[in-house]
Image 1: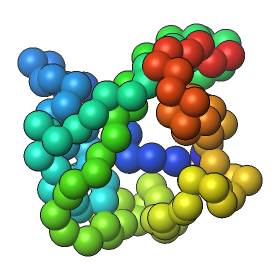
Image 2 (image 1 turned 120 degrees about the vertical axis):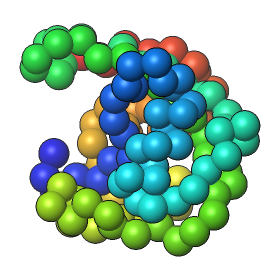
Image 3 (image 1 turned 90 degrees about the horizontal axis):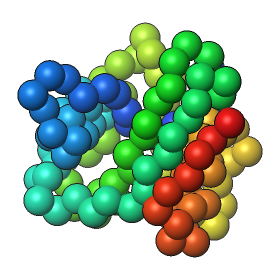
Length: 115
């Protein structure tokens, strides 16, 4: 979604765990090193074909509190910039399902369906 902010994301590869996929994707997309033992699961979202357009998706969200390195845009052909935002002052142009997942994180709801 050009012009919108999202989160580092991707797909789980064959024989890969959710946490190891997160560690790999974050390293590939923003250059940070994360110890998967420090990750905390907080939400899962089912997005059906009507919302996504091609097929159903199931998104897992984890809280990352500890990392090493400084975030950099390692995929400038896919992403214009990366920025940090205070949860109390988020911009309007956030990917809609990510915005909803952040709201659910704040209200401690662990499962949602997005249409």
